[in-house]
Length: 126
Image 1 (tube, rainbow, N blue to C red):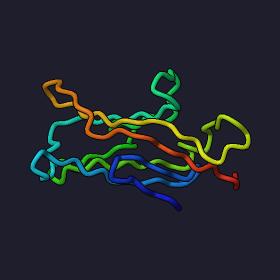
Image 2: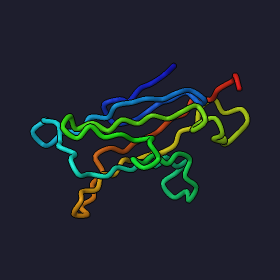
Image 3: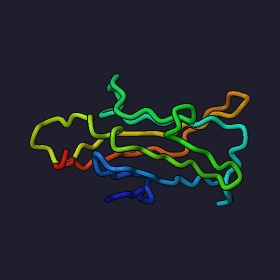
Image 4: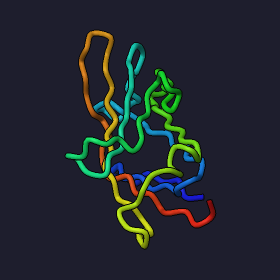
């Protein structure tokens, strides 16, 4: 199972596998950012301009979980979340998408602490 997020925020996962990843959000001093009262959302799309959402993760759908005092956002995808994603060609081994994570405070302030590529390695066993 491949579960990774590199220092630039790029993620790689295996299609059809469980994908848990913890994302650390820090303040400008490098300390955990207090996420108390924040909402979180994340989307994966094939391109920035694509209207189709490949993965939609929120607190309400349970794919994202916050640990406010630790400043972490945990993403957990189930095999069903990626198994139906269509690749651009039947011969493509990987699909490189884009993603970002947005956090919104109770007062409505929105910021994007993480963004990058979201690469999916194609599964063979289905």
